[in-house]
Each structure stands twice: as C-alpha cells, then as structure tokens.
Amino acid sequence: QVQLVESGGGLVQAGGSLRLSCAASGRTFSNSAMGWFRQAPGKEREFVAGISWSGSRTTYADSVKGRFTISRDYAKNTVYLQMNNLKPEDTAVYYCAARPQSSWIVVVTTEGGYDYWGQGTQVTVSS
View (cartoon, rainbow, N blue to C red):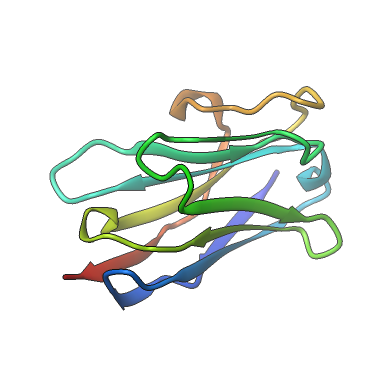
C-alpha cells in the first residue's frame, strides 16, 4: 500500500515558478515508478511527467518539456515537480501517482499504468 500526499500548489503569475512535492508513505516507494498528471476544468486528466524506479529515466509531455523537471529523493520518500516559466494553460489540479514493483528503468506514461493516486493540488497561473 502506498499513500501519496501532494503539496506546493498555489497561485502564481505567468512566467513564475512553483515546486510541487509528493510525499509517499509505505515501503514500496523505492521500487515505484512515479508520475505527475494534471486535470484542467472540463478536460480529461493528462500525463505531465514520469520518472523510473531508478531515477535514471524521465519522460515529459511535449507541452512542458524544457519548463518542468521531475525528480525524486529516496531518503525523503518524495517526488518533486519543478515548474518554471508557468503559463495560464498550466492551470489545473496536479496529481501524483505511483506504480510499485516497476521495472528498474521503465517510465509509466499512462493513467491506467498507475496503482495509487494522491488527492491533488491546485495550480493556478494568472496572465
């Protein structure tokens, strides 16, 4: 069992930065692929970024490449999403997800590929 708690969301002006955190509880964090998704009002949830169990591989949605960075801290059981140069279209609820017992280097990019989800944190970018 993995429990995920996101934090770090808020209101920021366009061009600003935020860092989201996802604290995981449970013994399986270290062998879990982790990911960030987002859902804007009236839209489906979409993949944003993912990181492998090893931490050696990352994947990003085209819309955030070069602006967002996903990372993980095994000692703190936490995964981060650093978001720079934010745009109004980044406004959404951001969700953290985990897939335990993943392959060492696999990055999971599909919603159905994850087993556990956090409650979400709101990010609002004003123009």
